[in-house]
Length: 128
Image 1 (cartoon, rainbow, N blue to C red):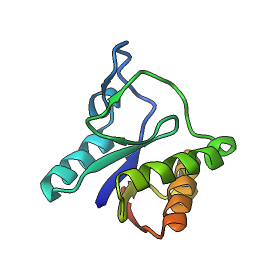
Image 2: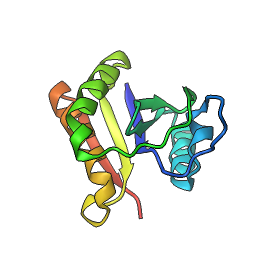
Image 3: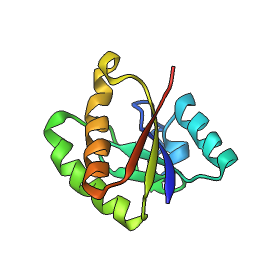
Image 4: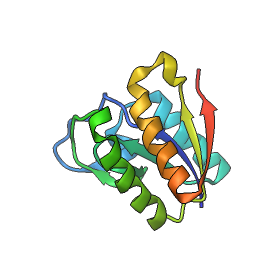
């Protein structure tokens, strides 16, 4: 299955009950990629630094955790399992240039390593 994907964001709804991921994360970028997925009929996932790959309609509790380098290896294992579960064959990743946005680097490392391990095509779609 081909998917669209971007990373989560710091700005989240603080509602205590679990919310759909698309409602938990407050981001024009996330909403824009979600809309593109709907238009192109391609499932949209969000890469969370805590949960891994999340379908946009999956329920997510509130949390505040950014993916750091010390958790990359652990997250690669989790994402590999999730990609197998969803039978992901191609990831169109919507992101920014990591060299100019160091906070994105661990997320790139996870997706690239998981894709390499599974032989999944990884396509970077640069956002402005």
